[in-house]
Figure 1 (cartoon, rainbow, N blue to C red):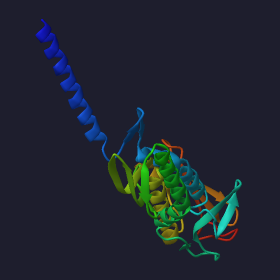
Figure 2 (cartoon, helix red, strand yellow; figure 1 turned 180 degrees about the vertical axis):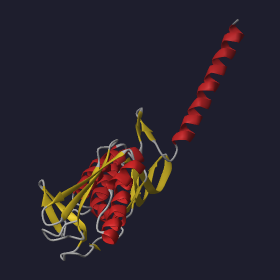
Figure 3 (cartoon, helix red, strand yellow; figure 1 turned 30 degrees about the vertical axis):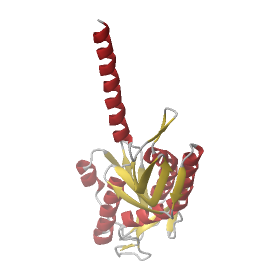
Figure 4 (tube, helix red, strand yellow; figure 1 turned 180 degrees about the horizontal axis):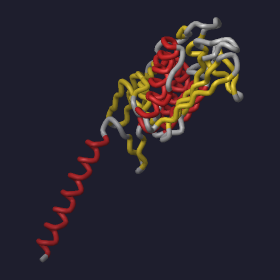
Length: 251
C-alpha cells in the first residue's frame, strides 16, 4: 500500500510538470506571467488605443470623412464635408475626395500615431515595473478599414528580458467596426451623384438590409446622405450638390 501511494504521488507530480510545460509553451512570446498575473501586450495595447480610435473615427464619419472639413455645410450642429459638389446649376457634381476610405484610413493613422507611442511607452513602463529589462526602437502605425473591423498594425521592435527573452517585431490589433460598409456605400452614392446627379437609396437599402440610408434635402439643392449601421450604431454622413435646377424649373 505504501509503494502504491508513492507511485500515485509520482504520477501526480509528473502530470503537473507536463501541464506546466504546456502552459509555458502556449504563453511563450505572448504572455508574461508574474505573481500569477498575466500581461498580454496585444490586449494591453488594444485597450489603450481602442477608445481613441473609436472616438476619432466617429468624428471623421459624422463630418464626411475629415477631422477638419475643408468644404462643408452645417446641418444640425455638424460640419459635413461635400464629397461631391458643383456651384453651377444644371451640371452634375465633381467628386471632391476620390477613394474616401483610403483618406479616412490615412488621417486616422496620422491621428493615432502619437497615441500608439504613448501606449507603447506605458506598456514598456509596466514591464519595467515587473522587473524586466526592455529595449525598443521607433514605431510606425498603419490602419486598414476592412469588413467588420479596424485593423491596426504597430511596427515597433521590442525585446524584453528576464530569465528568458521575448521579442516582438509588430503588434496587430483588431477593433470591431462596421465603417467599411458605410464608406463603401458612401463611395457608390457619390459615384451616382457625379454621374446622374442623384442616387436612389432604395436600391442600396434592399441590397444591405443591415443598413439605414437616408437622403435629406435642404435649401440650395444640397443633399445630406446618412448611412447608418443597425448593428453597431455607427453613422457616416456627407453632403452633395449636383444637377440643381433653379426654382420653377425643378423636375
